Image (tube, rainbow, N blue to C red; front, side, top):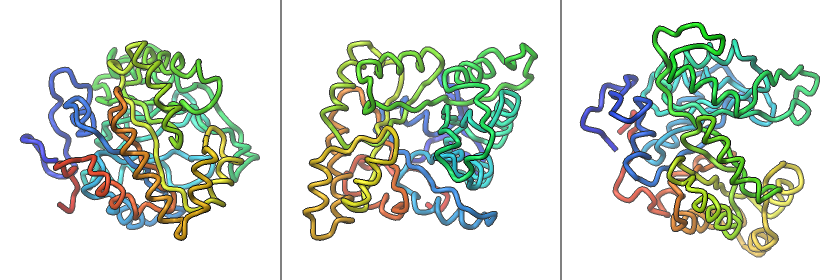
Length: 328
């Protein structure tokens, strides 16, 4: 999707009236389009070409790319580093910031640096505990959490000041996001927690994997009753499962992921389980797009990133839109 005022690659769009960022992602959502985002796998490498090759898999099929920040408490290339590389190429990036590894001084510095590089979207996360990753001996920080980091960055943007009260001469022009999990107990509390994140400054949310449409419908009904769908853009998370065995492992070992028995049974009964995982993901997206209040989907295709283009094409969720990419 090319806008009339599209600049050269690596340069920002003008900020439209009523918008907070110069990014394409915010423009797509505010225009009422069904948005698609995806998560890029950070390399265990200092080679920038690995990042470019991974991002190219998403060309023409996603509106923004999430750069994760030590996801699962495992060490990879940093979200700041990946964003520095990809914004130069013109990609629309969502920089994730985890509170696990940084205090408020470091986080505020990263926000300014990211905005200066052209990052228009920031997703605030509390972060996984270090015990779940490959450096369990690491010392966690957790100076902030997702709520207080949202409030902090919103203050930097809207009030042009650091948390200390010191003035910022040129504030970060960023669109703020958060995560949500409608599929973990206590279920009745989840819409209330979303309301708190919206109050703290969240303008979009990406959820945990959705494999249970009825649970999502129940959650979204409560969200609509509270009027939250008019205050925040909601992108449920989806992704292809590789096999029934991997689905069982995820269900038992990954906190917050709910996979119904029916999904595992469907995978187990398929001749080609990997392809059936793709088919299930496509089915999920086609059902999600019909739920009132949903603004898009967030695709997390761990080790199957090359299948995202196929998934998006088969669902036709973009219609005749082709998201901007540097190789267009």
